[in-house]
Length: 247
Image (cartoon, helix red, strand yellow):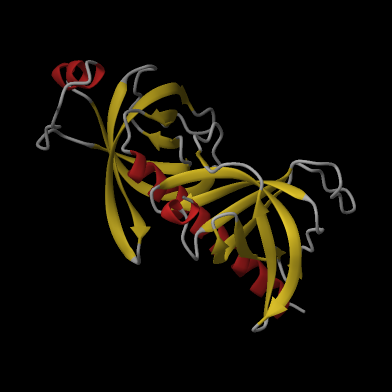
C-alpha cells in the first residue's frame, strides 16, 4: 500500500508529536525537511537526516513525528517513529517505522513564498461563473482582454497580487502565470476567488488582492506546492553558500 503512493526521492515534512525533542529554544511545532531514501517494507522506510544550513538535525531514536509526503499523486500523511540512525555511503540516514495508516492529506494552511511573478488576470464572464458554480463542464474564452498584474506571494491555497485595476471582493477571476516545472516554464491557468482588495497607502492607484484558488485541479495544486518547496530549498542553499563564502 505504502509503495503505491510514495517513491524514492519524495520530499517529506516532519513535525514532532511529543515533547521529547526540544533543542535550545526550539518548540515541538518546528517543521523539518527530508526525503525518502529507500522503502524497506510497507511499514519501514529510510529517510535522509534533516539539515539546517550545514548542521545535521539528530532526531532522537524512539521520537515520533507527524510526516507529510509530497507524493506524485498528492500529499499523504502518517505518523512515524525513528528506530535507528546511521551513515551509509557518506549519507546520514534515519530508519522510520510507520505507526499509523497512510492517508490522503488536505493541507489547511500553506506556506507562502514571496516572489515577483508576472500574471495576466480578468474577471470571469457571467456565463463562465454560472457554469463553474453549477459544476457544469466549461471552457474559458481566450479572446478577452487581460490585465497585467504581479504576484507578490503564492501558496498552495492561493496568492497575493498587485494590479492597477481593483477586482471586487468575492468575484471570480481567471489568472494565468508561469512557474518552473521539471526544468521548463509551465503555464498555469487557474480560477481564483477574491478574498480582499485594498488600495496601497504608499502607492495610490495600485491595489493589493488576496485570492484563493477556486475549483483548481489537484495536480496543479501539488505542482505549485512542489515549486514553492523547491524555491525555498534554493533560497536556503544561497543563504548557506553566502554565509560560507563570507567567512
